[in-house]
Length: 555
Image (cartoon, rainbow, N blue to C red; front, side):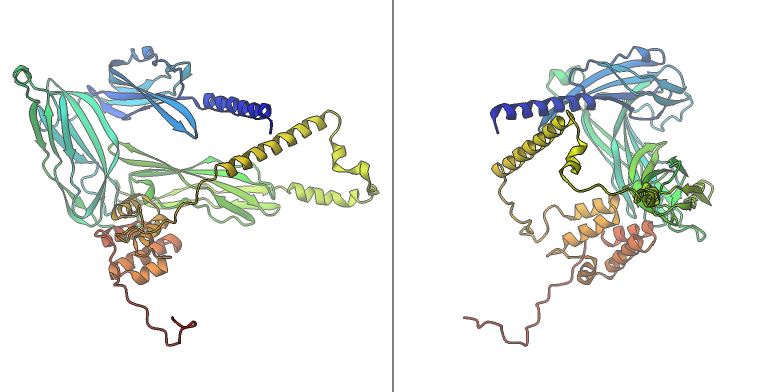
């Protein structure tokens, strides 16, 4: 390959890379909270990947907000051999009035952000019990009497009237429930009893695993604040600050006897069609998109979105897309799933409406979310129409075979030059790719062997806990198999090697929920309880001696 041609290829690749970088540059805006009280602040974040972006124009915000605390941060990262600049701008907004406020689109270096909405409550918000102290902690749940396995939002707020130099905020997990931190801390300012407090808000997901009284330990804080004149004079690092929240108690209710299965306690559930195909054609794929919005659950607690069977139509689901947020002090998830519908024949087809039963924790009653049925008249496919016209076409005489009837004759005139150029370019590109791969082929990596402790690298009890909290049952099974020494080759071997009957029962419940339509939430609760201290394995037993003589004599 000549140097001129290689340089031309490299130049074309660089031009395409620059085009893709410019196309990917965009601005995105979001708030750290969707609703606040009067006198509080909210942080507006704006992120752009444009290399030549300037600071946002905050002028449109002056009408409804006081603006303070402008900050910016720029990061450089290398993605697929290309450098990319990412800039994050942040500004604190304090509303001038209550109600539903709109944050208009803002200009960031020639780009426009999307508009946002903020709900501002009236000034009659509840005052914390220890308002007036220099530093104190407030914590609480969105539901004081939740049901078993209900997703409860737990919020811890640290109030400090003095600027903090350092500190550690801790919330211990209760016995009989799982506690998982959600998202990043929200920081804002709030005026209470004539004093201005800096607030750090930390959110958790609390899932009770047994009914009865649930005791949640109080959160603790230890840190240092900025000192006064004499502290600075004598070199002190600042005043020590301590705060302890009192323990809280929740009354966990058992699942009602008439509750639907699988058990799904929620505050609200809505199903809708995002898009539906207007027509179906035999042999052609069409897309149908379903959306579910659950108030009071995470993605792992929701049952799988599946369409009912459609006679004469094959359904191919894509992976579920989950958008999890924390709204009104509790989790909320939006699940979106696309389905490809491929009819096998022409005729009528009908889709029964999807139905999902759930338990309304507010009303204490069974609810059912459903979608309306859909019907189509499937048109014949292109192949069917061509086969119908085939008999008429056979009456014409077949062209004689010869050099003038080759497929090359379909390419006329100057088009042949472009076809030849495209084929030549593709051949040269493949040659360059193969040459580069053979030249820079890496050495073969050593096999992934277990470490000296007998565990597969990267699979620990911490990985098992994360899988039980976040992952699907397939990944939970893989993690359990990988924790064995040597790793188990499947769930059947895993069951044979577990020494704890409760753990074997939990794995069997997981498999029923995974493949047989069992109760997924109950199975996850059994797994968390049975494997809280890690898996228990049977002692290795030596293989029995073979009664047959060895095939080859031992020398």
